Image 1 (tube, rainbow, N blue to C red):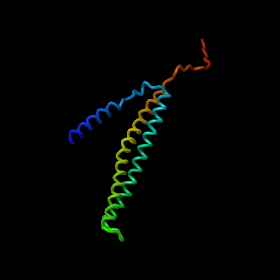
Image 2 (image 1 turned 180 degrees about the horizontal axis):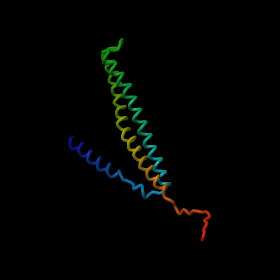
Image 3 (image 1 turned 60 degrees about the horizontal axis):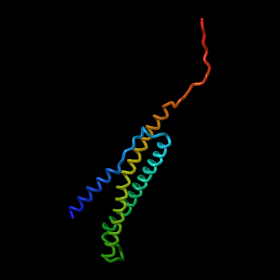
Length: 142
């Protein structure tokens, strides 16, 4: 069993590292940067949603489970019934915790990508592309 877990972790980490291909943002044009910005915003919003939803589910259901534990029993229910309800609330709370733990890195990565793309977009905005100044000039000779 230990060997299977170690092999799973080794292959999982190796595949995860292969999937993390970094794109050099300086080589992208404006359209590609805007597309990447949209993807980064979706990633940030997904992470934020998962984090906040997971936090609220965790707090609500773990609070219910804690309330049931502190009250030692639910009136009108046998011990096995309220223990099952406590376990159900605790299980749903752990699902919320898992969602929160998965959402936080997505939120952070999305924010980092947005700031990186913003920097590159500002560099592009400062560069003049074949600009030419049109106007009149006066030459005065003495």
